[in-house]
Length: 242
Length: 277
Image 1 (cartoon, chains in turn red, brown):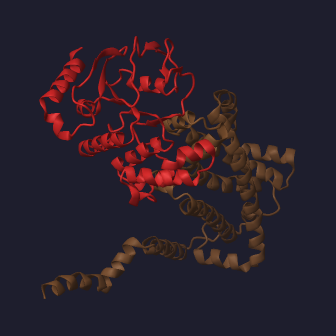
Image 2 (image 1 turned 30 degrees about the horizontal axis):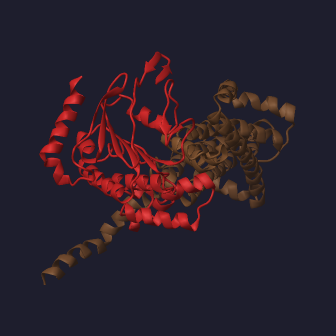
Image 3 (image 1 turned 60 degrees about the horizontal axis):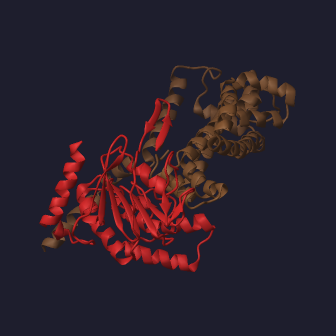
């Protein structure tokens, strides 16, 4: 993947090749600026690669895909809509109206992210963590098969971050989606990833793919175990090495 | 016993008359009003004390009497003449400016083609343009309305276009991934995101609109508060001129207040996260 800029062309990603299995929790970890977000946007079909191709369910991605949910680094809620209407926004935006089923679905999702009592709250009345939960619920409203998450917890404080990591894991355990989760946090990668792709930077390439031996979803206690401890060490070595 | 003691202590302080008066002065509108009254008194007394002639600076009492010496229907006629031009000009400016801002924000080519022209209009001294326009369009309210449109157009276009461009790129990506139509993206995402900027621009535009209307009335008009000022000063009737000036300030403030009220009432969210003004 190349970008043309005023100061010349920049090679953001190079020779990236990997497969994600259905219902897998796939984590991409790498230093900032290594092209993780670019990779995610190419999977979403928001930008097309200058060379090579991306297939989802055996079909080449040529335009923005609608069967996936995207969770951004910042919640990016619409400030004029309350929490529930923000969750419903993709339906209203796509179809121009919301059905009774959509509304039921929004209520289910509010319960899933534990914000039922905040349905009518406006975004500026919610904390950062709550806003991001609404962002996750919004990404799930059209029941996508694939969930793409671009450093979704990086703007949150450490405690909220840990809490949301565990909540995301339990959401995934309940509703198996194929998740591609981009992060630069080693604990997050170790906690969540069924497989972890480590990227090196400029141009971003696959440095290695690590498969922790412990099955996901994992308890927070298992992070202290030897096996995951070794995975964390391996990740740390791979990321700090080059 | 303990409880009654601790709960009665603060109650005593809040009912203290001096304290509540002090609080009202600090928090309510009392302080600016008191200060304004003080300024008026100093003004009145000093014109009398230093024997300042009325044609240099009339005292507030003379201004007030001059205002009352004319029948209210005359003032109402002047107010309506000015207000009509201001409101019509603003309305045209908002509709045209809104459409142009959308075109500018969505198309790079429109932006490149029109921006130099817009900046040229903005750089044209409106006072110099007014007599020319009045010759071409006649001395009626049409020319005055065009002047109001010209003076308010630029801040509105720039404000709304900036707002549309300030839509977070991620939300645009979300919209693209949902395959929403351009018009739906505009109405459900970009225009709402532009509203805080649009309101800020509108607050600038309402005061500019009054300036534009008055400038136009100075050049050619047979009614309006600007015309009233010109007429009064040509006969050295300073108190009347000041009264008309006061009415103009009141119109500006009321329009500004109306925009602020509209924003708070119907678009309260634009006040909360963005700046309040």
